[in-house]
Length: 168
Image 1 (cartoon, helix red, strand yellow):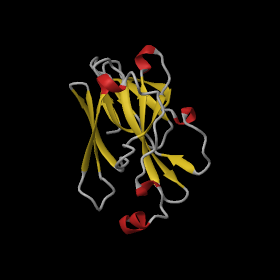
Image 2 (cartoon, one colour):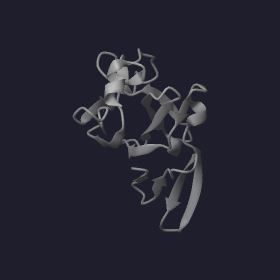
Image 3 (tube, helix red, strand yellow):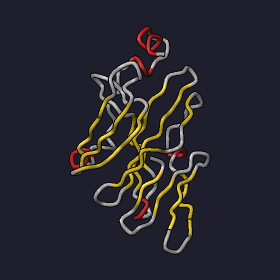
């Protein structure tokens, strides 16, 4: 999903070949650029490239949640969770790599939806495994989302591991 409808009838879009997000007002047939989706807010890493934002979804407070897929020069990739309260004039916030330290990171995200304040993210689970659904209880996460945690130990983050080579 590269677009999401707002309750007021406007549509927020993240075209693939741009570095910005746009708000289209279909009633007035106007479009404004909201600004960059957030790559400049991420830690600088010359070995990492980011995709356009996708899986856009809004929470009950009108805050936009979305993901950026990052690819490393060594072939590994990861998915970053972003939050943007653009309706209140805030900047995009990078919230870290999606995953759990004990199990795996989220890979190849295809859909994201919020239901009852829980963010559900569907992913490929690395392609060779069964599809996965990752969930985040936003009511608990909001107060901790800026805290650093450990990176997932998933071999998918390191393209030199045997498990990664088998998935490739």
